Length: 314
Image 1 (cartoon, rainbow, N blue to C red):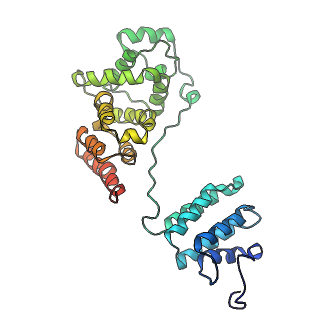
Image 2: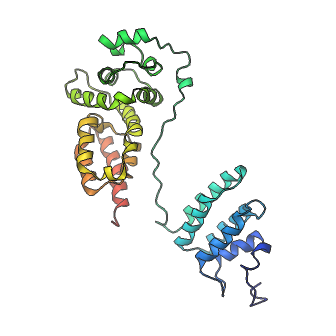
C-alpha cells in the first residue's frame, strides 16, 4: 500500500488491515510512522479489545514468521511479551497465547529475557494421601512418648496432631531420617503443614542433636525433607532478609545445619535466584559441607554458576 500511495497511513487503516498486514506494521519500518514502541501499543490496544474477532492468533502467527525473517530489537520483544502476559483473552485461547509468548521470548536476542528459575512447590491432596489410613489419636499419643517411629509417618500426617510439641516432631525427625523407610514429599509436607506452629522449634532441637545421633542420617531422605522445609520456610524470606548476613547465619546455623550437605539441585538453583548479597552468598558456600563428588558438582552447576551469571553485571 505504501508503494501505491505515499500518503497511506496504516495506523489510520488498522481496522481494515489483515492479520498479516498488521504483523507487517509491527515488524517492518515504514516511513512517516511513530517509533516502534508506539506502534506496538496502538496495535495491541486495537487487537486486544476483541482478540478473537480481530484475529489475534492469526496476527501472532504472522508476527513470529516475519520477526524470524527480519528481526526486532530486544525492547520490542519485551514490550510484546508484556502486553500478552497482561492480556485478558477467552479461555480457549489462553494456551495458544502462552505458547506464542514463549516463542517470542526464545526468538529475542540473547540475554533479552532472564532464564526463568522455578522454585518447586509440592501439591498436597490430603484426601488422597489419607485414604484408608488409620490415624488413631491414642496410638499416636502412646507412640510419641517412647518410640516415635512405632507409628507410620503417614498416620502422623493424617491425624490432627493435637498436643504435638516441638520435641515430639524433633524426635520423629531423629528416627525417621536415620531409618530405612522412605516417604514421599507430599506426606512430609502434609505433616509439616499440620505441625507448622512447632516446626521451627523442632528444627532447632534436631539441629543441635544431629551431631550426636547414634545412627547416621540418610542423605536421600534428608534431601526430600529439606525440599519441603524450603517450600514452607525459605519461600517466606523477604528479599531484604536474603541480604541480611546475621539472619542468614542464624537460619543456617540454628535451623538447617544438618540438612545443608544434602540440598537437592532444585533447591540449590532456587536459592541461587534469591536476592543474595555477596556476603550471604559466600556464607552459604562456607556452611555447606560437601559429602561427595555429586554434591560438589551440584553445588557448582546449580548454585555457584547461576549466581555468578545473574550478578556479573552488578
